[in-house]
Structures are given as C-alpha cells and as structure tokens.
Amino acid sequence: DQQVKQNSPSLSVQEGRISILNCDYTNSMFDYFLWYKKYPAEGPTFLISISSIKDKNEDGRFTVFLNKSAKHLSLHIVPSQPGDSAVYFCAASKNTGNQFYFGTGTSLTVIP
Amino acid sequence: DADVTQTPRNRITKTGKRIMLECSQTKGHDRMYWYRQDPGLGLRLIYYSFDVKDINKGEISDGYSVSRQAQAKFSLSLESAIPNQTALYFCATSDSRDSGVNQPQHFGDGTRLSIL
Image (cartoon, rainbow over all chains, first blue to last red; front, top):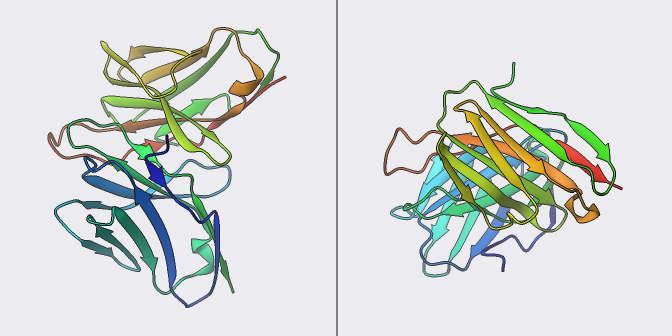
C-alpha cells in the first residue's frame, strides 16, 4: 500500500507565478521528509527537506510546509521558472532507519 | 564525472536471461540502495546495504539479488528475468556519518531495462 501519495500527476503554471505541489502520507512514524526533482534521462536530485520538528523550511525560491496533523506536506516554488519544469517526488522516512518511501511524482510544466 | 555511475544505461534482453546491473560511487558514502521506477508507482526500494557486510531487503526484493563487492560497488542481479521486471532502475547512496540525522540520497542516472 502506498504510504506516500502525490495525487496530482501533473501541474502547469505560468512563469513567474507560484507552483504548489502536494504530498500526503499515511504513516505517523515518518519524521523526515524530502523533495526531489527529476529531469528526463537523469536520476532524482535532492531539492529540500524538512524534519518533523519544524513546520516550514525555506531555501531560496523553494519552501516546504509540513502539516503533521493532516499528514500533508507541500512544496512552494516562487517565482516559477521554465527550468523548474521536471517531475517532483516527495519522500518520507523514519529516523530509526534510512529507508525512504517515495510518492508517485508530479510533473510540473512552467509555461514561459 | 558522475558521483554515482550506473552501467549499463540501457539494456534489452529476453525472458529467462540472467542480468546484472552495476553501480559504483566516488562519494565515499557507506550506504547504497537499489530502486525501481514504474509509471504510476514512483520509486520502490528493492535492496539496501549499510556497509559491505550488511544487506537488507526492501519492499520488492522477490526476483532480485544483490552483491556489495566493496564500499563503492553495489550490483543488482535478476537471476531469471521476466517481462514485469521491465522498469527504470536507480542506484542511490547516502552518508551515515551524521548519526541520528537522515541524509538525502544521491542517485545515479538510471538503467532502463526492457525484458521481452
């Protein structure tokens, strides 16, 4: 059963606007969350992470928000740029181990 | 040069053949992983290794085996390939030296495997 879910397979956004990618999880033991970005013919690359002791983490144009009570996290990209067009995966793990559980990905297209 | 190198990048083979996918890394990381990616299913963990003498099954290990030949090398074998093992396979590494803190994984560029 999928423990990390990304319910939107795709998203299109105009350049300069905000992109919001969503992720839900079911396992309350998860305490570390990450976002990866993947271009075609390349492996996923780490983008940003958040620990469960925080509800927000920001890195430049990228901000991840965590709502533990709702078991939901989101990635905000502001402003969106055409180079942000990629597939975004969220992932989660428990601090007791180092197994990561990945969502199914959301394909973001930023329209110039 | 890539920090995590997977070979081959593409492979087409027939049902019943034995296949080995190789992964090598220059990052000096102790932990290595094999994932497969299928459309609509994201990345799923096949096997992982926390050091040379440590091998662990992931969520979908049936039909696969692995070998950790050295800290820098982790290979994945399909002993008798079947068509539903057609997928994109990724190797990843991570560093455990910051104990108690999860570290992001670093991925290779993948091996596209097709089994006819």
